[in-house]
Length: 514
Image (cartoon, rainbow, N blue to C red; front, side, top):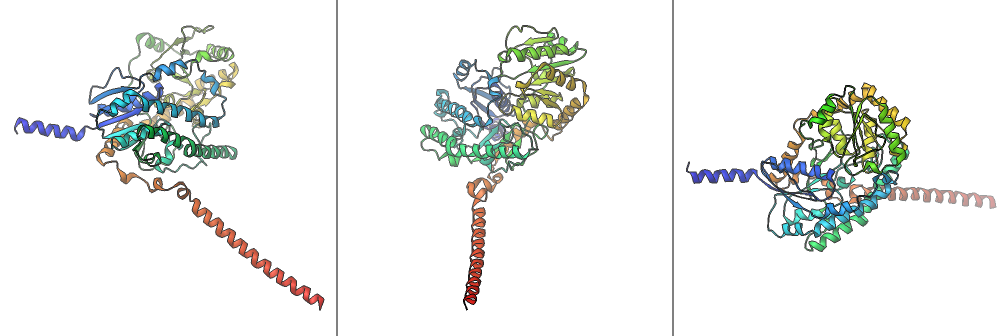
């Protein structure tokens, strides 16, 4: 074969396998970026040309494929202005207040993303993309990017299957056993919990349809006046990648274009820094790892709670690694080591790690299950309370409300989890379930992304329910018809009985007169 022909053939093969993919994760939160970055890296390492829109910048891009950042500059700086916000105050917030709060967060992030000069520069560059992946997190107006590039829309659900995505793809989600993400319920709900869950479900959906979607549609039209209405774009997803798995979350229905990839962000274990490795290797009784995530600043907790935690940690024989956001901690016991950052996944992978004290965030929950480490959850906000409740139900941990922490309660839970092997055994069993899969979750995400591109949006995966108006989907017209017919039938019976009774009474009155 001539060199020119060979070159053309190689280019054709490469073009057939390499796709241009846009990944959009605008939320200025590291936990969200970790997931978006892991997905973007996985696609790039599979040989694709990936463009990542986010508030962060990748300093070590993957070597295979192609990866570039479109950074939403200023987002993190503005977030830092509110760095004194105390997330501990959210623990006692009524979960229904999350509805308007998420409206505010979503509308603000979406508006600033659409207005950002770096996004506008990309839009004006005349580039094309073969697929657009958008984090489904109260940023529905961004679905217009798939319309703009005439590319299949892929949604990514940062959390488990939830009401934010179910209606968008016609996925059934009965509130009788599927709790809303801001409630601390499991699938086994009492009557009162089912009532609250149903009210939250209805309130959330009414809010989306009457307030949130119209606001998102308005800001979308300001930047893309010729785009179809959001009521059309919102229901045009070819695929939903879900950060969940049966080992982590309760099993729930999935339509064909919903794919679980929970655990895909967990990276290969790396060797710990020498000082940390020596600390853990020499911990004869084991190590307790304590982290409240990337948003919560533990130094903002009350003096009372801090003292209770320090006293309880000082009583155990295990060493403690505590992710603490300041340089010093007055009253720190000798068995506690502080740091502003720890390589969490590598610590959880160490055989001497006996317990993870956590806020119950989903990424932390996934990582602790992946490595088979039991947890003591101290949930504060968001889906943390639901994750904590599930850990307790599944027997690999306990949930203790932060407001209820006392030295005695914390000591009791620490001793139970550290000394009773059933919790570690249950965590190990969950880990086995997470690992027992036909292929790695990141490979699954890559396969289905490529599948959607190959099959031009894969419309054959779309269920009919997504095209039905809500009244048809919920059979409200059928129910109304049955109610009206039943009411008419009852009225007819009543009318007939009344006629007969009235006729008989008139006959009896006539006989009496005669």
